Length: 154
Image (cartoon, rainbow, N blue to C red; front, side):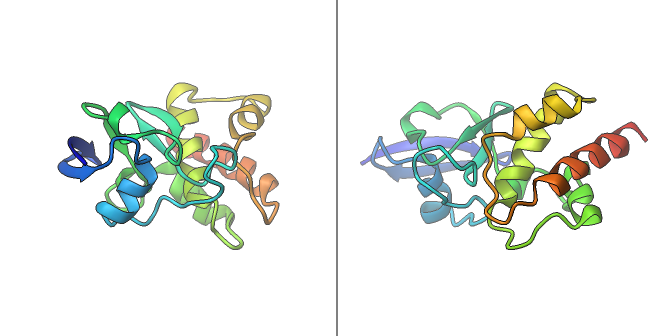
């Protein structure tokens, strides 16, 4: 085991884990942050998406040793009061069914809007393509992202 200094949601944490431990398990098992979900374990579904230095990554496959000194944001840190435009739009459009993939979907959508404040429909589809929804709420996800754009512009 090794000791790692992490910044998660603006707070410093010291963790002692094996160097190859994926960030997902550090977040869930060590830091007790359960918002980030385990879906597939091979970076294919997007349920475990978090931001590292502003970039969405799949936390299930990134070893902790590569993250020291990076700024990590989870769904718990996206906004203090769950009032990020994407979160508000998700509620307004009533996106979730089972909800399992939603934290990864929201984190990916939030990163998209940081990079591209007014994405086209094609850019939305392309950005969200790697996030799987077992319930098939893709039309509502796209609509919620479009609504978040309007909220951010207002």
